[in-house]
Image (cartoon, rainbow, N blue to C red; front, side, top):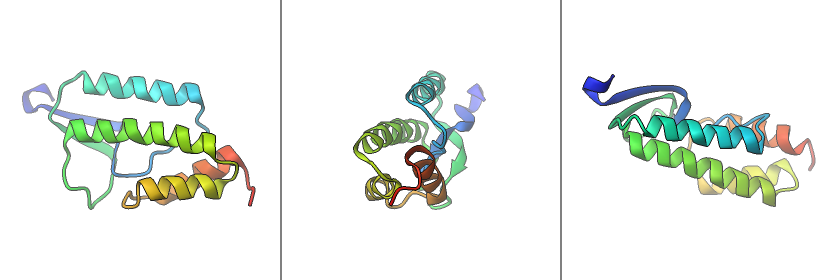
Length: 117
């Protein structure tokens, strides 16, 4: 909605919510970053995310897109440093302690690292 400087992003942008990265690959995560670039290119001030923490302070487009970019980068780093799901979960929870829906993080961790202890 250009007249309102508003984007409704669907699943491309999350607002302070753990992102669905189950079954993701380095290539699919890179594609997600490209999608974030496309959304950012719209230049909206306000963004209604497809997944939003009800406690999120605002719907600022730039902040949300930046948060999502950082989340994916941090996930990549944490995944590379983890040999078990709990390690990935612990790293991401420490970095994003107030993010909603930790279930999605758990699913991704167990999907990508198996059911190791």
